Length: 67
Image (cartoon, rainbow, N blue to C red):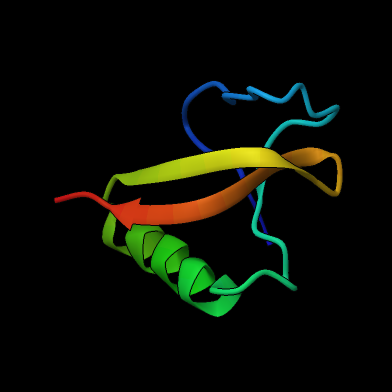
């Protein structure tokens, strides 16, 4: 799953492509995916923790819904 956000991509590890990725083989993949989609549908803000790259994009390792 790849996410495109309404703010510029923060890419601390210099991954070649933009957007953010939740790797399907990652522990918590389904939970992160559900949180991100639910927040989008509800118009809520999301905080992401990014660490490393996967599929040449910044890798999401944590998703937090704000508010």
